Amino acid sequence: DVKVTQSSRYLVKRTGEKVFLECVQDMDHENMFWYRQDPGLGLRLIYFSYDVKMKEKGDIPEGYSVSREKKERFSLILESASTNQTSMYLCASRRTGYGYTFGSGTRLTIV
Amino acid sequence: KQEVTQIPAALSVPEGENLVLNCSFTDSAIYNLQWFRQDPGKGLTSLLLIQSSQREQTSGRLNASLDKSSGRSTLYIAASQPGDSATYLCAVSSSGGSNYKLTFGKGTLLTVNP
Image (cartoon, rainbow over all chains, first blue to last red; front, side):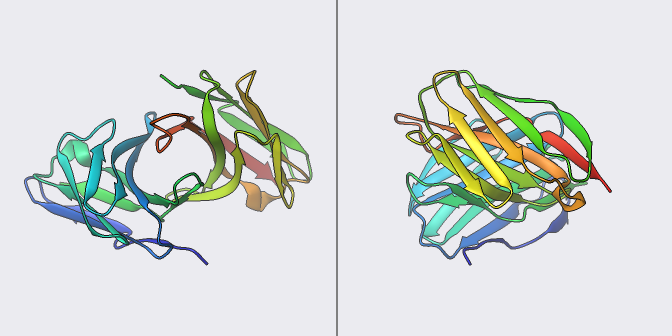
């Protein structure tokens, strides 16, 4: 069965910390994505990568960066965590032209 | 800019009822449309994917239809069960250079009562 795995289900970090969220897929998909989901705002695209070492900004990239050194792994980095980055973070992957597969999500709380 | 609307926002039905969830989108130039299910605090589970050239897809008790010209999709759930209780999300992938991007509706919260 195909899988997108996010390294943590729940994470609590302090304001100002550098935070890494990891995502791994085992489907050899070219495209990978990071979304955040907030009540009333729905899902919003932060960054995506269409190939190794390639990345593009989504709708809300401010305060975030990403890294994709290997095809199967896509990391989201919060450079200096702030309380307004408390959210549910969802990783997804896709073979070009096909549907998305999502991970189980990381609930991140910044205190 | 593509916008996706889901109606109703919430729906409560008794077990065994057949039901329809609605999704509309403003730009008919889509690449595909995908229906997801989300349980509280969890990630998204893909239910059905309809490519732009298709009219419907079926999986078990689920049937999704697509009418590009009118900008609408429906998700039909037959013989609903309490285990179907979840939020159902519709997402559209637009055609052209941005077909990577999914635009989501806000979802329909479904409750199936035993």
